[in-house]
Figure 1 (spheres, helix red, strand yellow):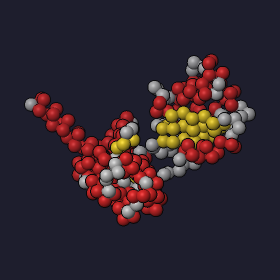
Figure 2 (tube, helix red, strand yellow; figure 1 turned 45 degrees about the horizontal axis):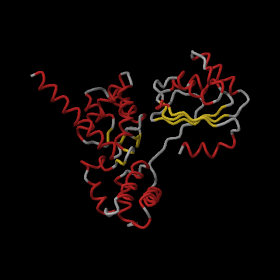
Figure 3 (cartoon, one colour; figure 1 turned 60 degrees about the vertical axis):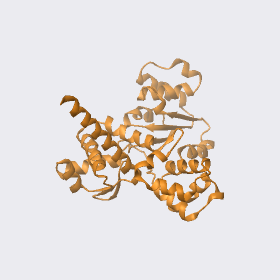
Figure 4 (cartoon, one colour; figure 1 turned 180 degrees about the vertical axis):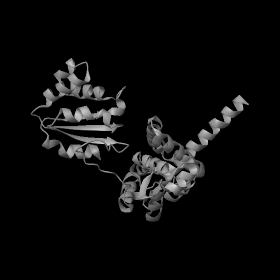
Length: 294
């Protein structure tokens, strides 16, 4: 969606369009991001300043008087952006992130929800082929994909290739929770891999709220629980409700849960199944460690 928006807006930015996927950078810090952008600007990229402050000045000089549109994909924290956003008053930025970058100033946040039932239906039919349409089973597959675009694309691609599978048979396979994430993998597209990124972001964060959020994610996975409020979370963590509420908010920030009401959070089914996998893996590791030291 970000790429589509940038392509549509490109004619309004005669100074050029720059695109950097921060996940592709060896060390995706503020300086590395600026250096990649400077390299995309042309000849100036051959003489990139060796430190952040000078790189900011260099980028400002290179873009002054130019309307430039910058797409930054997979930003993980505000520190990667703050110097850059201040460097170029004539630039406009489109930023994608797996977490809410709440500490940035003058930013319009757009939270992407799952597709509507009708849009999910249309996407799945378009990918798997209109000659195979069984309306009831298409909607059933879409529901089992939580109406999420990545899951729908994978399901459609698998159906397009495996012509011997009927939509009903594929829906029956997806209905089995144990193998649903395995089925929602096609080549380098994988729902499990996408959730891995969210989970690793949670593990790499620091602070009390993050540690509590990680523990809560494991506890919910152990129980296969999708819905949770602060009282339930406090019971699972053995902590006060304020700490539990902060942990739930952290999971919501990372899109591992969604806030349904002031004190009601929910995982979609695919995230719940992933949490259950993580909990099983953690349990096996703990059992192995216990046996090793017995």
